[in-house]
Length: 220
Image: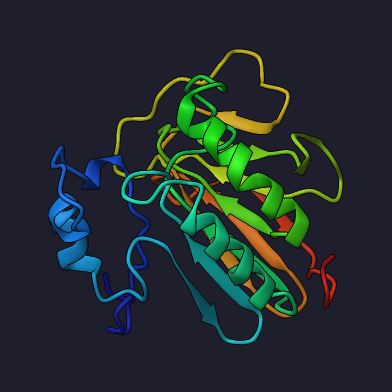
């Protein structure tokens, strides 16, 4: 991808279920040959963090495709969140949603995320999480301790760009502020004052928009 003035647009990719095969190899480059070939120069293996200037940090996670939610990845997540405690906006990106807008709320991957990662997001005050997998559009209410809370985490998703959108429930689920079965991409603009999120459809029309304020300098 390139901008209109010829600059390349970099891609930071989180691994998902389509990137892995059925091999029983312990080598992640065998389990995910195309992902590792195209994105193997990203820092770390299938989970890592990146800083973008002084205002933003991104944690890229593996929802059990190569690395399990618990164990080393959960320990690393704690330390990575703590390391970015003074960054105004900290985001996470991963494949399987904690709060799905199409699939079953109690699906194993979603439940694992809510069990092993959501409490860490809450403790460290994550700004927003970008979820995928369901091929729908979603903006959650702010959520903390698995309930609506004005001081909680924003969950955006659910991965519906370049795929056929799926249906959402006729009635919104308790955690959904917006849920639509449409193709879209989330565009995020970050400054020192705020982060702005816009869901754009295939024609570039804004489907939804919201903002986040900077986090406190130290999150307990």
